[in-house]
Image (cartoon, rainbow, N blue to C red; front, side, top):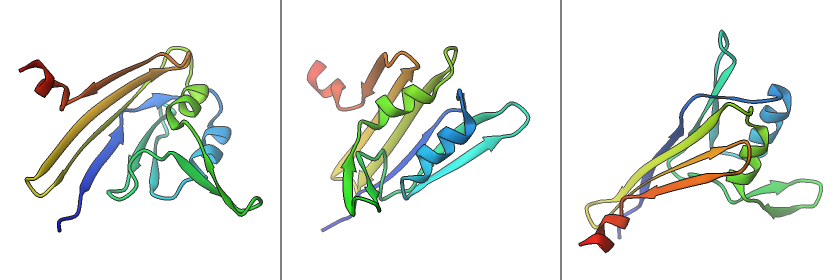
Length: 121
């Protein structure tokens, strides 16, 4: 049996409140926050085991909390900024996956998936 490994990251984008955004990202393990200090733009690097999270652990509740990461991310974006999450991965050559999501501060989202091309043939 093979393991699935994925590389996932975002572009650089602007946020409304840097402190609130950093607090949001700290809820999750496996996400590195990259800061371009001159321009105050941020990028996210996801580790190969977690990718885009759908929950975080709340220590006060001692339980996992489900979230819509894309929706929560959109709430932090500046009005003129778009976050693009791109990921690609494989389980040896048995399964290959690639996708991209773009979202703005209004929660409008576009999704592209490499597997979609199979339905076109």
